[in-house]
Length: 132
Image (tube, rainbow, N blue to C red):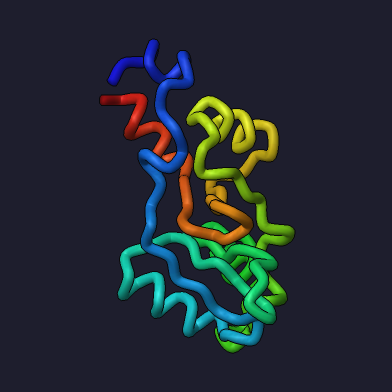
């Protein structure tokens, strides 16, 4: 895979997204989230309310919201999640994902198929693909 391929939109989000997905409700504590991230080796968890995705909690949220503001670890994730959830279709191109991330200054996008969240694509995924 070359940079030329990346720029020609020949690769789709579904080709490189992570299909491992953990979801929680907004009342899950920050401590519980941190443990899930540690055990799963992941940096983002989707937050759902009434089975509807309402936000995302990322490892960066811990640094910018929990640690920087000295919030207690029992803070509900609903108070610190990034919301609304930014979603991209699984058939979108990597260039589209990169543009969404750049313009929104975000590093992770939820991936959907028929209005169902099926994965996550990150800026790291894009960089790794570009480096191939």
